[in-house]
Amino acid sequence: MTLMLSLLVNLTKIFSLTNFKKLCLGLLNKVNLKPWDVVGIWSPNHHQYLSAVYGVLNAGLTITTANPAYKVDEVVYQMKDANAKVLILNELNLKEGLEAAKILKIKKENIFVFGEKKNEGVRTSHSNMIANLIMANSFESKDIKEDDMFIGVLPFYHMYGLGVVAPLAFMNRIGIVVVEKFVFERFLNTLSVYKVTTAHIVPPMAILLAKSPETKKFDLASLRLLISAAAPLGLELSVEVRHALGIPIKQAYGMTELSPISHMTITENIVDGSVGVLVPNQEAQIVNPETGKKLGFNEEGELWLRGPNVMLGYLNNDKATKETIVDGWLHTGDIAKVDENGNFYIVDRLKELIKYKAFQIAPAELEALLLTHPKLADAAVIPVPHDMAGEVPRAYVVKKPGIKCTESEVKEFVAARVANFKTLRGYLLITKAINNEYCDIFFILFRWGYLY
Image (cartoon, rainbow, N blue to C red; front, side, top):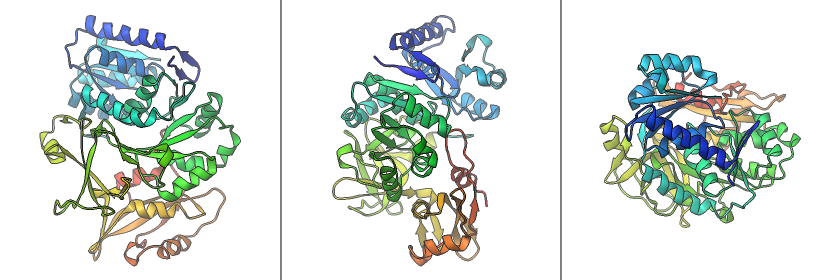
């Protein structure tokens, strides 16, 4: 029997089904929505979140999920863009939610409550989701046992949590512990108390598991497998996590536009640094982004993908859809390569490459190298404008607690291990990490905010 466990709430499968069926009937009978009408959810993880999701879908409606960290104007933008007719809130953000609903002119009877600005809305069909769930489960089901327990620490407003972690638990009739937000010590305690066997995580979480002394304070004997996605996990970090915990860590790759998984690692054949092989019914090709020429094994180019999981398109943006999907091929914008055994490696984002003179530098490569420095806990590399060179790489690094580390040490470490054009020519800042509740380490803020 599938269980959804909040830290203080145990819900049986029957209770969950009852909840979402009630919501389904309420949406159809009381709110009087039409098929395909949009329902918005703005809430952190909650034991009723998944009941809301499946209630909406069971009613034949469309769902849009908003980041709980959004401000009112950001939620208003998303809901207005999606033309949401109903808003589901959490009591924690009820005041802000009501303010957003007022701006959106959503009636009070259309507001339900339980216990990046201007991002492109992705239109994903029911067929996309079911196809991808079957594709992903062909890999995951081999690792799942009857008494297994997942942890739902990744936000359900994100496709990784909503489209992979939760439905795979339901599909395989196993338990899932729902955690409201990521706090590292609480995360470790939940793994221990509920005897979690499989943890779906993101790379910043992997860094903490491998490097934090807190990890050793908890009994994680039940933990059998880590699955990392959402961003590439470097080879060195993969090895470090495996050695620190004594269990395998494998990667998956995907994006919201793919509903969301296209690659997964076979547990019996983990290749460190690789995001795995193609899931069934997924086609791929590596293409030179400038010439459109198809490339061979171990050649780096843009990853194009085709399959039944490719989105319908971007919401209210035909131009972006036509630029992204050409002849059925989704242009991912990621630079990748594939070896002779079908293992794929993500090198970097195409638009994030640093253009130093005539050379291209992948920030992810330098970040992965910096993470191997014995005195560093985290790192970020961003492009900085330069009059003569166009752009130069700048690093922001986080030193380990209680350890002294100088700028010259880090620069010399990098210079000794990369070609001259890849060296750190921008100012290097050594600082403390700034973590948000979902462990999106500060380098994400630096990269997308372009702070320098």
